[in-house]
Length: 156
Image: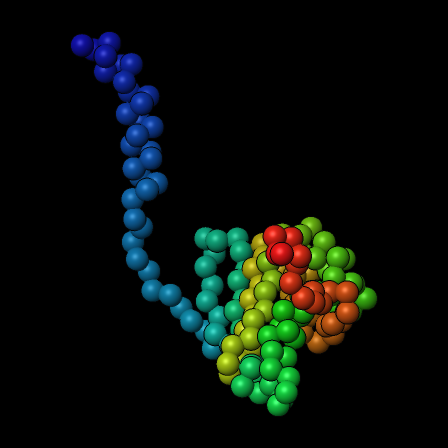
């Protein structure tokens, strides 16, 4: 009987460790900081030192409700091209840089807003935010990044 318990001890300790890690931690209140830029942009900052990621979500006024007459879809097209090249980088170079840094960046147009997000590791934060700033302030809108029509594969 003692031999059984001695043989089972490592497994029991492993099981105990798994339960200790899986147990829910004590809930803690989240602190939300209000931050305002010199230009008047208001943001809410939530810090969590347990996760080595930076996640930025933002939106601003715009969207398809402001598309000019006869140009429906302009906001959607514009937002879909925001991460398709910026500054001196064409779409492939920009996407390669995002991939090399493990950055996820996206933009979308709603009815009344343009939304965007950025997710990156803490260690690549500065470069990732620089790419986001470039996409927002100096997008290229290259013609070759625009896909026109429907692919012919599978269509009669």
